[in-house]
Length: 609
Ligand code: F6R
Image (tube, rainbow, N blue to C red):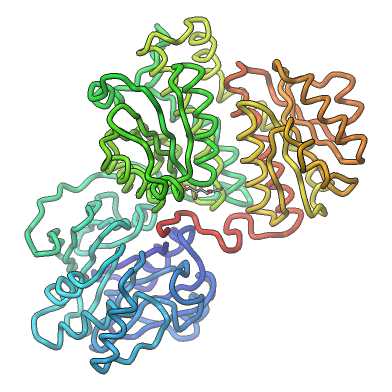
């Protein structure tokens, strides 16, 4: 999981590559590097750590040229080090790579036996040696790359340059994303669109098994055997400003505050203004292909998996279809029972998560239809699924997912309402209540965001903690899990989400005056039961932080802090309860001085198993 960029044209490539890499740093930031052809020879600059370190190297020792490639790395094979940083050079060839070459050990042995000197621990370096070896046999960089690719097993997005052919780039894609940007007298390669938006809006998303041959004046797309593919460019309408911090200190805070708008974007055109009916034409071809949905299986990873857990409640409540939820990384290894009568729903912000993608392939192989909830348009999962409901949340830059999550929940409400209406099992009163709540949701989130002052005070109290427990029940229990995950990943405090009623079966042993207990307590049918659980916390000295739409005298008495959210339909409370949890994690992290947008050891899109 890395970011790749390439440029060929008349301008100074270094600036374009570094600015592109900055937009891709969310994909990994263990090391970075760029390569250019200078006076007929390959020249490389690399640095461990974030892009600023590479910039410092370039300031001290500039690299000037008009064709180049750049890379920002998230280590898979080989620890983060300058030696393992891309680009990787062999003879006249230099390569950047995102993905994993599964047979690299065998390839490396063969190359070493043939006399190659391997300098790094990476799987990538074998690619440059293979291409270099092919070039020596004759042919050009295109045919040499094709011959090398034929020997690779695994996933790759590569960009290749040769000192023998300055002014030419070759890129190829298998299972990890490549987008080619089309300019006037210049062309670009990147892992993702934001890297290109300052330069062009006309792009071609390569498909698996495709490659492109780029010069300043031409782009040819073909398959790995050289058969031409006629690919029409797409015009990207995203505003590049949406990829900036927009005045907030961190992307995370900006993205938390964007949620009213992103939910408007998710629901736009999907609720008929007159009838209040849900409009999801995306589902029609899919539902036409399934006689009757007997079961729904939701698969996702991380935060998206938490959205899936809420999705189970929604689909079972609205459409009365039995639903189960699994992790992408577990699903395909349990020989899942899935077939044509099962609807699989996969959830993925990036649409590139390797485990989720593999689950899609497994399910499709067994005849199930797949519906994807994705944010990134034309992402790998979106393209593999039978139908996609895009969340339209816009680029999410901060590694920790916020607006992607609440828009995934919103997509589940729309899908649940649609499945419920189509099956005739949805109670019209519940339908009307939920649609009305969905329409009101952006305003209510705006209200929930106003509790920031109280949240900052609470965050100061929580910041020194070593452990935090999050409790909730029913449809809000997944939100407790999500709150704990947010805190863990950005503040590095250990946190666990638990169903409130389970606390007495073990976790209660952890509670003392040093353990804050965050409880989600909407005024629903289990309010009283959860309150009883809180009394058990209080009597052991635990500090209670209550997030609620209703604080009675008892709750007020036992709580250290009460954060209120507006009231809405019980089914939609998970969205509103999420907002303070995101802010709480954010302000605890700020208090502890962590790298909020790029927490250690994490990367935005996990394209390896
Ligand atoms: C947590 C987070 C991750 C992702 C997970 C799946 O804040 O962002 O847990 O949710 O890696 O990513 P996508 O949704 O891109 O498949």
